[in-house]
Image 1 (cartoon, rainbow, N blue to C red):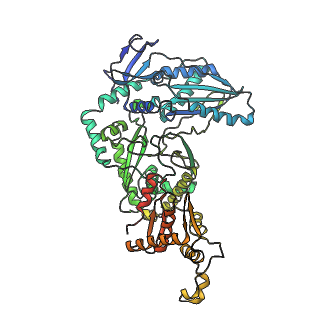
Image 2 (image 1 turned 180 degrees about the vertical axis):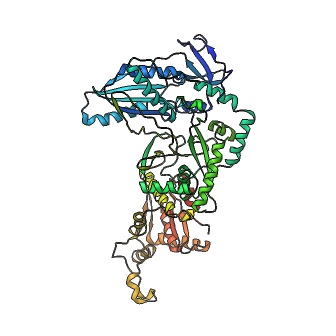
Image 3 (image 1 turned 180 degrees about the horizontal axis):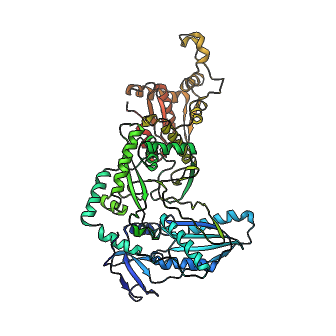
Length: 599
């Protein structure tokens, strides 16, 4: 039971606070709201924390009853009448005693039916990108698009500081009940709410202190000590400050694979979430080589009955850090992931914001603190919209934003497991993300086929991808490459089958035209003899260092004459050339260097 007895609402009149026209109440902001306020001030006008929904309505709509419905929801939930201000040095919720919400109607009946689908998505995206003013509000916007006498689209937009994903389900349930009543000129059938979001925020501040706070912090300090950023290879350098622009790719697992994943989870006495989490951490381990993989995961944070029917920003974020050291078999990793998850749920009451404040990670505006990738399996209770004389369907659209490097959201439906991977376009190309999802699906198939395989042995490539890499990319279609002369071989009959290597072909050209220009760069040039001399010097030096066949040698240089001499020198020494472009992101360079064994 959430105790609210004795909570005092501090009342302030219009003269005391910003010359407000209506009476207001002042409450402390929750810890989660404090962090969103900080992010809002850091990137004002950015829509990446907007929560947007679009619903297509077909049939006879009573727009007056619909507007009345939304205003009753606003009356019931104080959080929808809330704005924010710093009062006496602390961020506070400023709750208006009343607020009338309008329902603007936008007539789009002149748009041809063939273009309506595109027009809807364009309008939905445009509305989802409109910024909110947290100091003025309102922080809920609704608009009604009219396409015909029986075709409508309802656009609903919150700022995340007043609502979360669970809140959408609460809104839909109340919308159903209230619209049915108001369309018949009846009174609201819904009972008054026992508490409000402000009561939760006040309780949170009172409860989370002293021994309770220290107990929670002690676990997380131990669990997340020396946490390191995940050096996932990216396509572009990480910008100093993210733009929060994003895109998404979808995943759909077959019913057979979905069933086998559920069966494996039951056999190992873990949830499907833990199985999918362990698989995704395996993928990141294979990509990065890092043995500690930390991911964020959202949790509803409504573990008290009184909170289930409230609209508000309750969701918390847990950091799941799993140890993958020792290259364990997948079943062992599954057990490790289960232990981490169970413990995290036990200490889930510590707000992520308090955790960051306590751990004090290095300030880096380019990264989210403690984790850069989130992972979730959707379990928010579904709500069905049932409106008299209307049918409805949700409209899917991409707002084009990303709060993190990667946000991987999965869910189950009658057809199996599906997923959506939202990614930062600052860092990744769409082809990279599509390949990542392909690797993940192949990895899942490998896991259900044999979960006793070690993580490094689990196949990630499809048969087609393996053939492309091993055969197609290595196929030499040229028939005109010079062959080694018979005297260079023990078996003269094999002379036709052994082609000269690149550096050997180069040496033949040196013999033919030593004084011809081989390289030109800006106002510099080298003849074939000069280039060969430089390459030989480099080759001798590398051989003294121990370079021989099968040894990888990286070279990190901008385009210049010496870069070509270095490439030739590596090949002449017998090594394998590994290009390291100085323009690559530092994370990618670091990852590549880790695979180069010291000589």
